[in-house]
Image 1 (tube, rainbow over the protein chains, first blue to last red):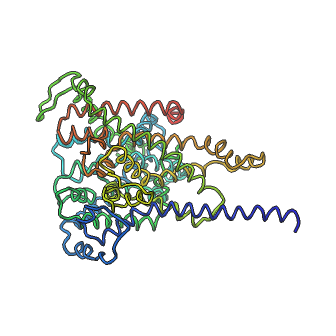
Image 2: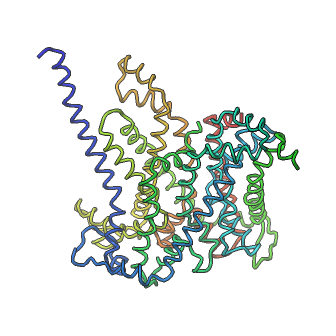
Length: 288
Length: 298
């Protein structure tokens, strides 16, 4: 064996060992992170009152597991599927509205030079980082003053021009060649026609990323609907589930299995479109 | 009409109009009103000007100071945990060594918690941190030969549960931020450093971290905001806005209690104004120190 191959084989062995250690390390963390989801999944086969009393555990007696909760969910779950349908409808409507309005606004910031553009865009940047919690009370007062509580419109309207979504679309539009706009103008298309008929159709990757991001946020939206919604028939899943988590509740089975089921649409979307999730979630971080 | 549709001078104002209207109606008007209400006593819709009474009351209110302490403490711990750890994990994922499939599985499974709502995550963690011997976390504690912990009844164990929830939900997202940042660093830097004989560790501290500055600034900013504005995690973990000795009460929780639960809108507005001033001061300091403001405004 020459010196050179010896040197390489000395190098290869630790490298393989390193790869193995790395794999064990990463897989262990990944499995630990999945434990809470496994725990709630196991919980869907257990007695709800016992879980609320004793907590979730992975140390279960297999003979005590049953499908009773699943039978209950599909036969006698009260308003649960109503909440599910409400959440689905609200999510679809709000995502569509947010994408349309926010991309519209972003186009203005990306494609034109006009007076007040910088000030307007700094406002977008500031709104991106201000958490909604800061605005919750002033908005809540406004809604109460105008007697607008308990309506879906109030949940949707303040967030149609969404700062993060505007920012993302602006970045995307900045990469579109201006020649496309000029070609449209030569052909006699209006400024708005250029946006709707020429630019939006070629922006589908951005639309997909933002649809996923907004869909996830809106499906999980909790604080603002909690302040706005009053009647149980109008509840969304997070609000409905929260009402089941009280000391006096008698439907803890529905709480557990309902919480688990509310995860499924998002998990399915994630498995199908993981790429877009990551693109959407990291959108704001790359502005440096 | 036709002229307007074709006008390149007017078009941008139509395009940004929805944002301007949103900013005016849903942000500026409510904020100005909140600022005015903070100098008023609001009872059954009747507002009386009372000067700075609300702020003086706030200054003397021990529960407020405790809530502020809880929020700041939580924020500092999330900064200490949710920046270095995700950054190190991102560096491992981004390195050329290792199995791509293992890394893909790792990324996907760490990202999954970010998909859960705070309601579902809170319910699960509340049940994991049950105080019985058979609760999941007490079984883990038992593996180390320790006695069961009364998690949500004591201050520090309660904080541990809250931080565990935060780490569970946000580690994966922050890893994604750092990976995205690392992938935007030119590989030429690393090649040059290797030729000069710099070790991987030296490269991480001398090349990766300085070039990650925009990402670090971004993650720090959203962590400061998110930490100080934390409310729902605690609200779900303690199954409501009340916790033993207010150990889980945050500034926003206090604002919710005063404004929504007690309907004392004037006083609650004062809480909101103080929080806004604190958060804006931190943010403007942060943006000015890092020069981000100048760059964006240009």
